[in-house]
Length: 467
Image (cartoon, helix red, strand yellow):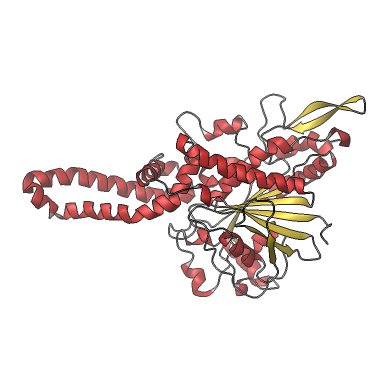
């Protein structure tokens, strides 16, 4: 049994004061509540972690699930620094220039913030002049100002213990570099050991919330070392030769069927790479509620824009960025094999999403009060080869109604209520057609290759996955 090839899933948790294994336990129980066991995790190097193992349906291979736990690298952020980052982020662009997911929410915040600032800036000085300091303290304008201070104090815990993670990871300030490097180093070690282990022939990286940004960084960093073919496996590479032409057929706004064809081309390229000795085993990148949907807002700086970094291949796109003229995703490289010089095609350093599919799940924001504004479509930022999938909660009854409220869905990408997914799928398919969304738990299991009858039970809310 142990000699058969296995598959590995790496779950990367989101921001907040996470505890080891909380996210992974809820994730596994949401996918297969009664079909798993755990064993020591010998690859992560942490004694706090264990790996979960379950068998795929239809006599498929064993699947080992690992957690990339990184919260211990982040201490509580400084309140005012985090607040300054959040305010700068909210007011970086006028709301009408943002995508639909953020436009309504940020618009309300921007307008309300400007009105309050204008009101207090005009009213308070006048109150002090006309009523004196004591009288001004008793005015309703001052009470509003004090209320805002109280709200600031109450919000401090959220800012320093949750949002601060995003502020620190997304901002390459000198004092944040050590934590960023430590997180990436742990992730690269785990990825490297999975590639070297010898038991795995497929790796899936799943990133939730800020974990999706970390996962993206790991793929772009690990790819450069693992993308090279082995000259001992020299042979024809027809898929590499035509990959760019197939990618260009996507266009800017591809249909679902065009994305299907592109992902099929990715699968063929991946198999060809394996035959040519390429060590890369990551077949899928799955993002859940990913802030990469707002990458231009989060990653643009005064000195360099996201698009420039993508053009320079620092931040990979899907499909890969190709240069001007005759520059392509693959270039010829000479190898000495058995006394002969042979040329093999090698993908460039910014092309992990040549062989690796990217699927992005998000709860659409509706009527400004429902959905998950943290996530959203990623393809507009990272390329038309990303499969964006709008989803709905896998819940029924009062939970389905309450958890639709703004931000609530962000922690429920794998939460599951059995009645919402019938064995025959009739009701689910009717809802798919009526709402234009997919059932969250069903589509997630499909992307992970875990489709099959789901045990009739409910899974807990992922307590370790915070905003």
